[in-house]
Amino acid sequence: MKKKVLLMGKSGSGKTSMRSIIFANYIARDTRRLGATIDVEHSHVRFLGNLVLNLWDCGGQEAFMENYFTSQRDNIFKNVEVLIYVFDVESREVDRDMHYYQSCLEAILQNSPHAKVFCLIHKMDLVQEDQRHQIFVERERELQKFSLPLQCNCFSTSIWDETLYKAWSSIVYQLIPNVRQLEANLDQFAGIMEADEVLLFERATFLVISHSMRKPHSDMHRFEKISNIIKQFKLSCSKLQAHFQSMEVRNSHFAAFIDVFTSNTYVMVISSDCALPSAAMLVNIRNARKHFEKLEKLDSIPSALHAAPV
Image (cartoon, helix red, strand yellow):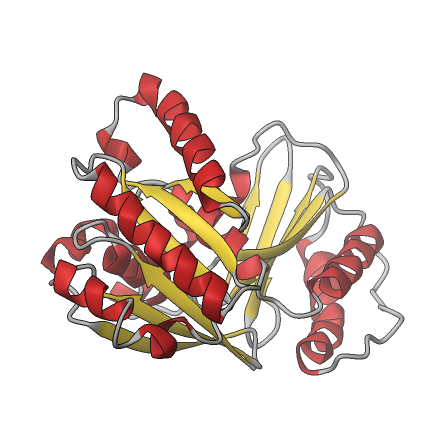
């Protein structure tokens, strides 16, 4: 199952940098050596087994942009599932940025009227911290009004913090087939485990694709923070030619377990029972593994999960 994703925005807005961090295991400082994208770069990213993201990274130089809306219009904008438009928050050519964005919207309405639209207000690390929220809210309001009749979801992003993972997790979530059934099974798994929370990560990108929460938590940004931290740790392991497979963290407040789950995912289980035996937790994860492997391959969902008693 292929899903066509357009990544667009003017040259230098940061499109290729964010793609390289999420899908090609770059770290932020290494993106400085990336050159400008010439015309369109195609990449196929396998995601959760049968789902393949057909990512079109479109160069943002003026000559290329004009071609996208004329001679290449049908080729670029036909059969699009998602349009991701990246705005440089410090751009001094706002009118031109909006002109190109409007042209994208018109082409999408004509060729792929059911496509989902996401706008990333990027390079927010360059804005003073006490002004970021206000600037983002103003841009978001303007873009959502400008995008009508299409609905536009906006995110504040930077390659230097976890906001990039929040945005891309939300985007990919929209593309996962049967995501509601996946969440229902994850809820059942969390209940059997008596866990406070269970997170499911895509194996290569470490984007959060599903979660189940049974106990409220005050940090609303914890998912993307965990994605960022574990992804960086995983990359550090690779540089040492070590293979990251699992991790266990304990303190006086909780126990957390991260382990390979299916062939395409990692799972993280958090419990406030600090005395929970590691062996029991790992047995339960192993017992659920086959069930969730089936969910990635079949449309019909088996009904029962079986876990060892804790």
